[in-house]
Length: 231
Image (cartoon, rainbow, N blue to C red; front, top):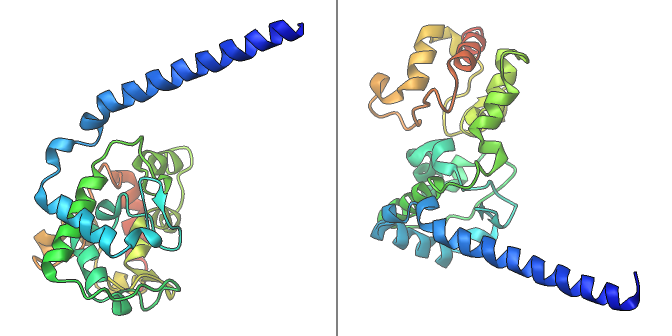
């Protein structure tokens, strides 16, 4: 190819790339309202976003791929730890994260501000973004714990966000009770029932209910069998 041919190939390639980029951008903006469920974005969620920005939460946390990497991604935080779990961490992070190497400053948020942040994170968690981030991906967990792999209960447990709130062998969260001797108090059936509907067992429970979409029945059976054996 001569110099003239290379010139025109470069020009045509650049124009074609620009056309594809602009078309994809226009298509994205055409669907952004539906993908983000903009109709669910109410005043509390908007207020929560403002609190989130005013307190510089993004300096440490990531949402939808933007932000710092010091602290956990918050895109699916409500699914992972529940609304009450978020409130507990925001209200007194020194206690909630006592066993974690990562620390969070106490922001002295009013209860109304905490509720607004929860509303904002709940809306963010509903954004359709191809199941991002991968650590909270339900499809990824199903794939990793499918019938071929058939991992042990402890492996399945560690693939779930359970240890973000509970501890096992001295490692994990402090929001919920440690797992180490849970088998002395609960049977397999009781553990399964509690995981599916904590408030049906204890109306004051702050643990989020785990649906079959979040924890498959087969995975829950293995987790419950493992935990019931901890005595």
